[in-house]
Structures are given as structure tokens and as C-alpha cells.
Length: 57
Image 1 (cartoon, one colour):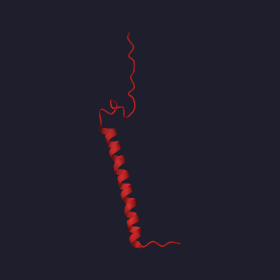
Image 2: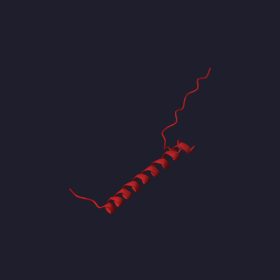
Image 3: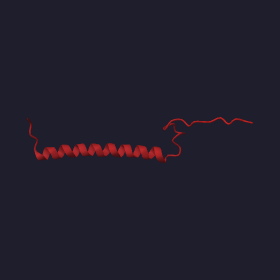
Image 4: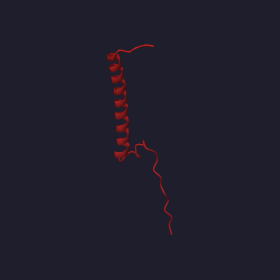
């Protein structure tokens, strides 16, 4: 069984936490962009806008 020194563990933990923080930041920015961008449909980033037909009487 390999024993890891406390310094190595701290370095590995820091790397993992930094990766997690970067991933969280990326996802947060992506969802904020989707939520706040009024032109997202025009840019074709968030799917299509459904168009309903109006029946004439």
C-alpha cells in the first residue's frame, strides 16, 4: 500500500478543487448566458422558437 505524504495530498487536493472550481465556473457562465441572452434563439443556440398559425375567420 502506497502512503502519500501530507504535502502530496494537499497538492492533489488543490488540483482537484481547482478543476472542480473551473468546471463549476464554466457551467455557471453557460447557464447565465442561456438565461440572460434575449437573442439566443436568433443565434440558434437554444433550440427553435415554435410558431403558431393564426386562423382567419
